[in-house]
Image 1 (tube, one colour):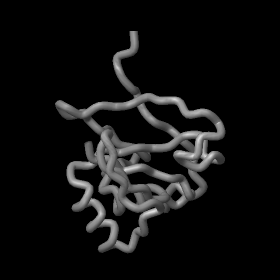
Image 2 (spheres, rainbow, N blue to C red):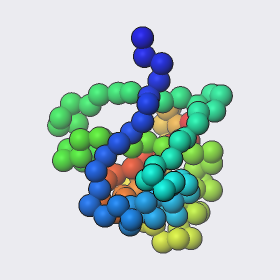
Image 3 (spheres, helix red, strand yellow):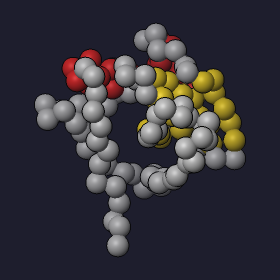
Image 4 (spheres, rainbow, N blue to C red):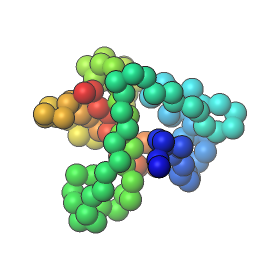
Length: 115
């Protein structure tokens, strides 16, 4: 029945600052309607997963965590360092891939993933 995700939507305290941050930090081209279309590529997948309310994988006060797949995590880390974005959690490697975490202007933890 479900074909795929139709979008991710949330509120922000400062729309212009948040749009600028996502554009500069994650290189997501934000259009004048305050969003963008990210088209899936072959081999790319979207994971839909639940966590218990007390699971500490991401902050318990944060109801939703964004996870973006990246082509090359080391290159992404270099970009973040060059523009002064600190990692909220250092690089981790597991059977699921490589991960780092950063925070957006609203303090929302974002996971960056290379599989």
